[in-house]
Image (cartoon, rainbow, N blue to C red; front, side, top):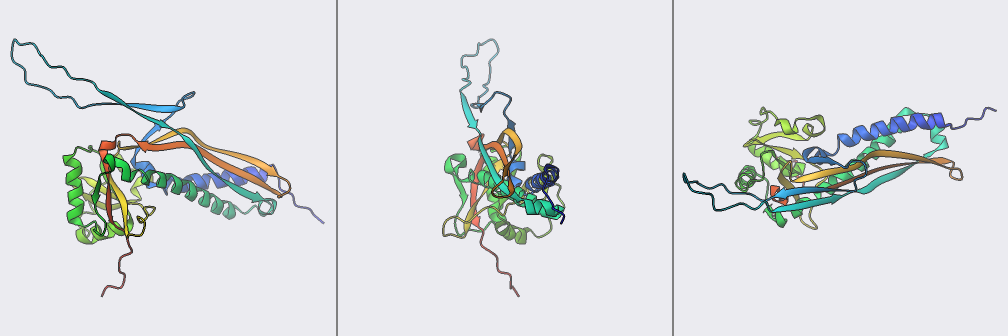
Length: 291
């Protein structure tokens, strides 16, 4: 009788297929990561410090007169440290003997979905604390054209920044889409957001130069049907990476399997609290049986 055995070569091939699929899936399932600013820690560094200076004022001058007033730099610092996130997958000897590439792609897709969802939810959790906790919109209100225009006007009046975007749940954006129809779908996506990992989540709507993106990971707030989206500049929030994706394998003989552990060391944080604000609108399912 022939005896089939699992080999390190089989495991190597399996891991390569699985992790490639996981990375591909994650990159295409986490829109928020592509919308915010990115930072990296250098070798030997354990935290990131970002200085921020206050706004200065220029003054009118008179010929022949010395300038009396001077401006303070007024430097403040944002500090961010990273933490590990990861998951473990058990690959049994039986699965390895099957050597089925489709199975490894499925596992990779599950891993990628898990990592993407974790990272995306971490960023979404920052929304309510932006701008000192200021919330635009309200419970039981819809993201219609009037409200969408109003939050953009507010963001521009309060000088959030030049690379503004709006993200909300697909059900919230459905209301806006019904208001604007297809008249705005031909407008191009701004260069700052025109990349594969992000543009797939663009709704095709752009108002006053501000694109609207959808994110199905936005959840309802407690018992209400509303949820927190965001209007922000690209520099309002940041993603800090200490190390990229790492993978370790360990044999568990009694389980007759290999443990594959995937980790990543990163942080998401507010870079500039004044450059964004949460927007609260209804995200319940729309009626689908309209006559």
